[in-house]
Length: 598
Image 1 (cartoon, one colour):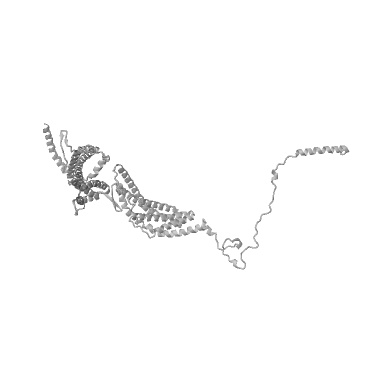
Image 2: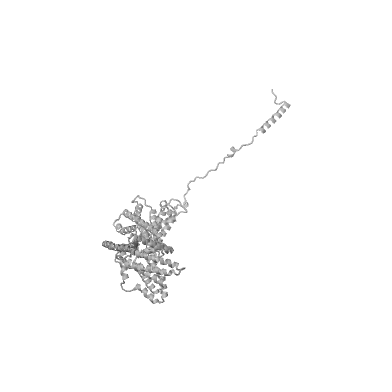
């Protein structure tokens, strides 16, 4: 009974399958499948255990994903009644996810084999099970390669399937110690991965180059065990066969497809991909900037255009930084001697932001020079101070210094030399306007020193030209140095004279000077004055009679201290003297009868 039911269900499935296939085939695929097999494998391995060498966890993940895929694709192996094996064929390849089934099956078998390899160090019998699982993985990869030969898969998918199948077969032969066959398969895989790396963009090249380097130790070990270096060399010569091989044709197709589907930007001989929409919008706007700026002579319109493009540039840089920060948290860290493509793109955007800011500042400098000249001549009452020029050129010096430290172009001598020349030009103008500022503050010594420093920068840049294509647009700034030299020379002479005179207001001091004087020689011995009367019969040597001059009178002295002295009282002494005098007088008068009354 059980066999009858299973046969009936099988017949029902067989009768239903052609109708579904017919309906699906009538629709047809809308596009060709592009499946980066190696990238999918590496990401799954790093996220599900292999970062820490946990092959059991990775094998469990592959089993769970196989179950989910079959459920989503409605491609189960049997039903509740029983198991029925179903393989992916060219006829039922209706979705690119069908290609994932043999790929994940191969990865599950390979992960189990690697788990057994770790356990075989203590249990040698597990080596037999290991080889069996590798054989199973090889059968799945061969089936995967067969499916990818369908016209629904593009050239890159076909190449990746061939390389993956060759690598898995080489791994099996390596475990079986069949060194020659292992070497052949591994070299084939390495050859295809190298070809793919040369055709893809820089981001995807990293994984393929890493896989090529991973194969080198196994290849050297195979060559050592073979003992025939010439045979190994013959296998390596597969990369340099003459003529247009099939691999080269497929790689050319891959390049054409990527060039049409991916926007790239080339800067200083290096091409990097551009994926973010904000960056693409900014680059398109930047390409149209020169034509829009060339159509207008209005300074306000130019400044408005620069402000808009600089805002777009800042947003593009910010979006790229956020994308790099997000990728850094999830992406596998791979150290490469060359700067990453997105980091190089960030350097390019930073370069554009700095150069656009310098262009805007140069427009502002033109406006400032026009206003400053009008203010000095008295044509305009709008105040224009030299400090404005100092700020603008100071900003350009700082931006040029930032460009010198950009990543990826530190060793570009031509770029760095032109930047150094540009910095000296900006510093010369900055020193000139700083000298004018000091001169306005009557700081003659500081102004003279700044004029001399500006002259030094002019001498260092004399006879040199900007040769890099990125900086040729600033050649006009270097041509203005001729006029700047004349301004510096005149200002230097004025500051030097004012510094020697030591007066603050030279105009007031000069107005008080006169060549002739009526003073006599005796009154101006320390001054040189042209006096023709000294050679005549009546020279003006001294004035006679001399002019009356006030002299001080004899001083009067007043004793003011007496008013402030308190003398002792003599009243007691005065009474004693008075009483003594009266007694004697009375005695004499009484004795002689004097003084009596008549």
